[in-house]
Length: 118
Image (tube, rainbow, N blue to C red; front, side, top):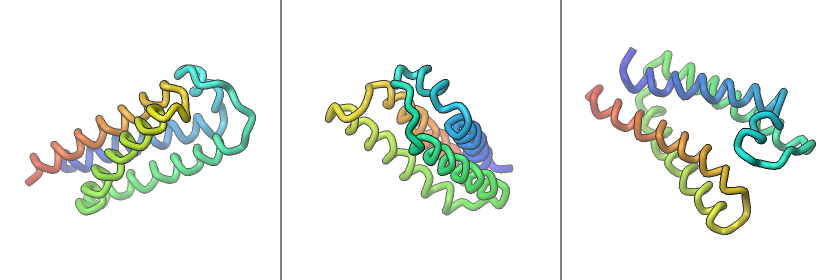
């Protein structure tokens, strides 16, 4: 397994676990980041989406889908930018930026791994 595939597979596991948590115990995770508890269904919908993204990452890593790895670098970098903008505009709790930092760290890891794989 290439270094970039490993980074994407690792992030896939993160997305799978985050998705499961958001589907079945969302307020536990939200509370850890100081985000108010909710009973809205949307947080569980986000959990389903995160879980599915984890599945995509897992299988892309298994297939060494380099183009997908490259796309995730840009997409995860954008997540950080979007979350930072939401925080800066006062639309969400500042704790959301931690999720963006995780995304950015994963993007940088995959980018560096892609460079090493060449």
